[in-house]
Length: 440
Image (cartoon, rainbow, N blue to C red):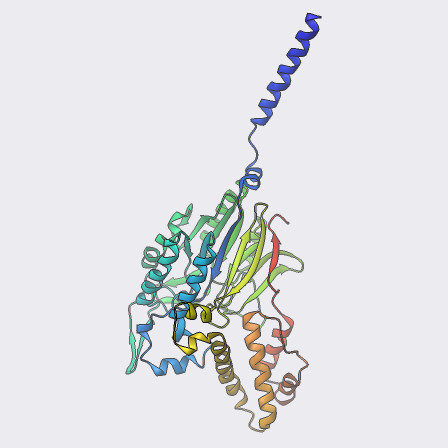
């Protein structure tokens, strides 16, 4: 009997020891990340094109030139940025991410003023993570606009960009690429942002398009390999687009060598890439029904002043949505008496029509025989389409509407007619969307 109880006791000890042993075996990095991670979020904005007010408010010629542009409300960019920052602080994301072209044209004074504003976000406990765009560094064409003319103003170098913006958050990164302003930032226990400087701003030879050099590609691959070993969900960020969003944009928007980073990112299971540059809100998936998403965000300087909100839960599921900067509400909150600011959304929407109308009028100037009535219908249809396409909104117009039919009838040879077809047939995915970063 004693032997029987002794045997049972020994078995009990073995079972206990086995339990202790197996519980002590460490979980994989991926299992740890999924088990211990807290949800994280970031706000993404791009193409602010901030110009310090003192550099342009005396110049009516500058304001007139903007009215023939793409709708950037640079005249009110100070107020737009203040309203945006107030919303960021109230939302309290894990980080604020800015995707380049944060200055109008690289002016030193603009960068310094914007960095001072962003310090408010950092002081609220929110890291600010910045990469440059093609308008930010070594812009020898940086200018000050006065009533009596246009004058040169100092610009900034890559080193000055780093000194201004990296203390706001990027200095907390875990890896840096020495030859460019690229870095890895750990957003939470299981989420990393791979911030990619794809701009070509060699002194005196700034290019508008983007390119990732082979040596930087090797660095990116190593960072992705390390992240995969640690079970990280990686979201990549660049100024230029990862995918071609519009077949009419033959160059200058997607990275020159975009197939190479696309293949690399998909090899390592990256599910979401954030970009800007086009000033168009357009989300596209690399392949029909599968592959990485490239979320190109519209310019913060252009109606409807949108920014993206990205949330990642503990299981790696990504939620991508869009919000608008509410300048009207901000103006009321600071007790502004400026009627334009208090009704800014309508003012800005109307301003897009002014800018689009200028472009359309130039196209139609070569067709004097079109009746005034037909021209009015053509212009109105095009203005609505432009505003909704650039904002990434569902269309309130259709390709077979009378106004677009008149375009095809009166000037079928005009390249703009093909642009209209593309805008209708290459639409953005509508937000919000949910992305499973674990899907292959």
